[in-house]
Length: 419
Ligand SMILES: *Cc1c(COP(=O)(O)O)cnc(C)c1O
Image (cartoon, rainbow, N blue to C red; front, side, top):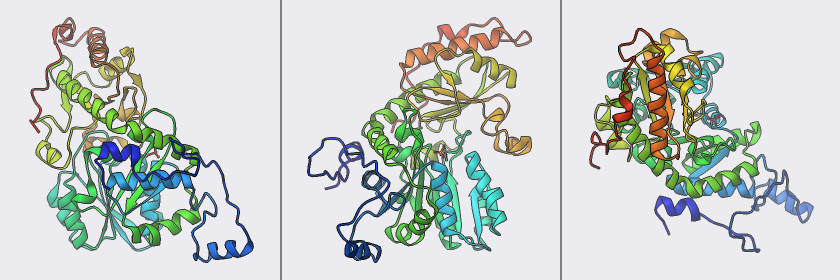
């Protein structure tokens, strides 16, 4: 029986022990014992199914993997200790010296490092393409490649890549298409249905979503997971702790409610910010003024839980804004029930350098807001208070004495498409 996502998140692929527990059992064990030497031999020969060692597989981790696969509509899933372990395993298990990778330029910092620093050390070359540059994708994929890595929407500028079009080009070039679907979550975007081969997650983000554990997942076809990914995971050991798998299963039960609530708040705050004083620009995929709005709404069912905006006063204004927030925390994490802001230019994207930041549009005034589950009015008041403080302490700014936010009520998202 196939259920809808909100139901699958709670009941998908449930397997109970003979005790009939309501919630999944935590098998916090590193290893497993055999009835006799013959059973051990048959297990290692692959003739009988029996857990061997939690680096290879564990019942609680398997419960998380089965539920993730059911949610994503994937044939198989392998869980990993972190999101980066998932990205790394998906790439290194598939690639070898002499191969070529094509990736979207706007990648999560550590994904960027793997592609641009680690892979070249192993004789794997790469090309970056700007998310929206379809001619660039066509050019890059007119020569053979073995893997394409996409992040959409991207961190932090929320650029959108056309998954279907790039997957088609990638397949012609002979490449496996890997989509980092963290920003969209499994609920808002389904890359496998758009032609991607593999989806990776940092489960640390929305799937836990409550600031507790790190985790990751790689999803794809059974044959690729079993023959390509699993030997890599089994022998290199980026395995997920059973306790963390259990925590992630608990996170999944409320994922749909949390993502819905955060998206509603993010959409309202994006509209509020777009009209707020001191804000030069807002990026949010569900707003009509997002440069790729039509594409975003074709491949996503909502705008997501992140809003990026640029303060007109550059870094000083951005810092004053962040420091004046009382409720919203300064943190580089995202997808949490707590709302968080980060200043990418001086944190997550400091290492890529000024030139690459300029290329990606990450100016010194850019702030990324991960919208949580607090009351929308409290979030709006916190933001309006911080904008006021940011403007007031900036003597040269024309906005100095303009407490306009107080009077600006949250609007009912008039800029949103009606889907
Ligand atoms: C956080 C994140 C990762 C890495 O996940 P970890 O769990 O922190 O290792 C990879 N990609 C994206 C888009 C992320 O947001």
